[in-house]
Image (cartoon, rainbow, N blue to C red; front, side):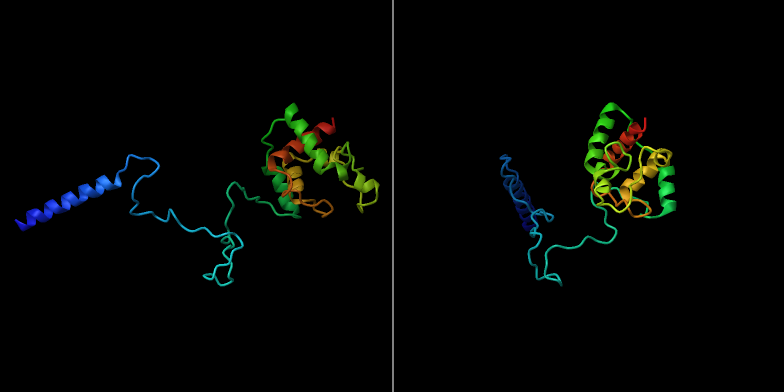
Amino acid sequence: MHMKSLKNTIIIALMLMTVVACNMDKNHPGYIYFPDMTYSQASETYATNDVFENGFAMRLPVDGTIPRGYTPYPYKAKSFQDQVNAGLELVNPLQPTPENITEGKRQFEIFCMNCHGVLGKGDGHLYTSKLFPAKPTSLVEAFVQGKPDGEIYHVITMGSLSGLMGQHGSQILPENRWKIIHYVRALAK
């Protein structure tokens, strides 16, 4: 008899727990028995934290971590072979539509015109006012126009081999670099 009453007590306790845990009010879902770190404490970025050796809550990402939404760029700066490889392997994913060329022009005027000039001839304000030491490359002549889009993209992203043109990869979105290339192609026509 004792075993039967223990079994009944356990069943009643489980039923009672189920009734208590199941609440029809969606704003108050009931008791949570295993929160699985749902309510972990977040620290402010520059707050102190005595747990860590340096006393800061902010941690450096693990080596090799790639930020969400970021695509690693596989080619090195100032490497002739990587520049050539980029020209062979990278293909402009955008079509030279009027909208893309117009946006490319707008981006060109923001990022490129000061050095390369309004028409891309290398006669921008920084050169004509003697603020730049050497004449920038003309973008409308065969030297640039004869290069594949991927090679031009690489130079915009990583800078020129000579180092006179700096890297613009951190300033210009990848999509806009391709649009600038379409505009540079249109300048030569």
